[in-house]
Length: 217
Length: 201
Ligand SMILES: [Zn+2]
Image (cartoon, rainbow over all chains, first blue to last red; front, side):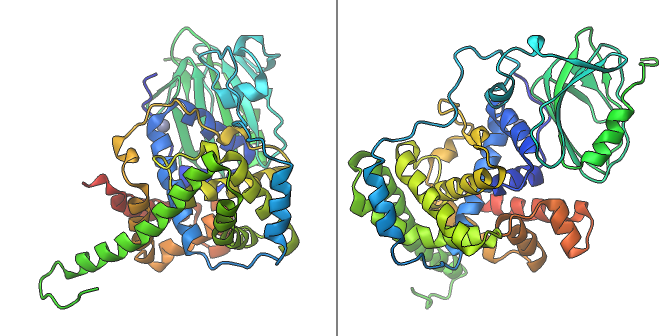
C-alpha cells in the first residue's frame, strides 16, 4: 500500500490522549493498521502521555486497595490475550478494527442509497459525531462546505481527487473547518471510504448535499 | 553533579548526569515489568502498584472522574497491568508509557461502556524506525526535559488534552481561541518534543 496522505500531528495527539470520539478513534486505528509512519508518531505521542504520568502528583490509593487487588489476582492467574483477535480471513480493504464492526466484505454490506451514485452505511457507534461508510460511483462528485468541527476520511477502495490532491486506498484526509474541497471519484471503480466527524449537525448538512451528479472532468 | 568546569558543555554534562540517573529508575521499572510476565511474582507486582497506582489515580481524577470511580478504574487498570504484562515490550515503550495507555484505555472503556478494541496494534507490524528499538527510557527522559521548557501557551493545551481529557474543540471553547490555534499550539509542542526524541541524531 502506497500511502501518501497522513494524519495531522494534532489528530494523532488527540488519539494518544484518548479524547477522540469513538468513530474518529476507530478511523485512526484503521489507518494505523496500514501505516507504519503514523504508528511511529502515535508511539511518540503516547510517550508524551507516559512522561506526563511520571510528572504527575500522585494521589494516594485507599489503604486496603493493594490487598484487595492482590486477593483478586488469586482468582485471576490467567493472562489475557490481546483484545483484538485478528480474523482468519481479512479482506485487504477492511482493516481489522473495522472488521470488528462489519464482520465481512465491503461488497456484502446492506448499502442504502443516499442519492445519485452515492450509497452509505451508518455504523451507529452511538458516540458524539457520526461514523459512516460511503460508496461513491465513478465520476460522481461530493459537494462540500466548511464546517465547524473536524472530519476524517479514510479511503478503503478506489480513489478520488480534490483540490488537495489524489487520495487512494490507505490515504486519509484530515480536515478541519478551514478547508473547502470537492472530491471527484477519478477512476472507473467505486470509491469506498470511512468518514467520521465530531459534529453531527454539520455532517447532516453535508450529507444532505451529497446528491449532485458529476459535471465535467 | 559538577558545575565547576568553565566550558560551554557544562549544561549538557549536568543534563546527561540527571538523565542517566532517571534513566536507571525508568529502566528498572521496565525491567521489573518485563520480569513480571515470567515470574508472576506478586511482591514484584506490589512494588509496581505502589509506584504507579497513585499516579494512575491522579491521572484519572484529572480526567474528571469522581473519586470512588477513579479508585475503581485505577484498580482495573492495575489489574490489566498484571494480566497483560506478557504484552509489554520494553523495546517499544517505557513502563510509564505502557501503563499510561492501559489507564487511558480503561477510561475510554468506562466512558463508552464498550471495549476499546481498536487500540491494539498487530504485534508483527514491521518496526518503522530502528531508533524505536533504542533506549526508550532515555528518549522519554529527554521528552521530560523538553516538556518543562515549553512555553506556557503550549504546555497549557498539552495539559488540557492529556490530563483533563478535553477535546480540541472543548479546549478552544475554554480558552476562547479558534480551533486552529489549539491545533497549531499542539503541533508546535509536538515538534519540539520530537526533536528531543533523538530524530536529529
Ligand atoms: Zn499515515
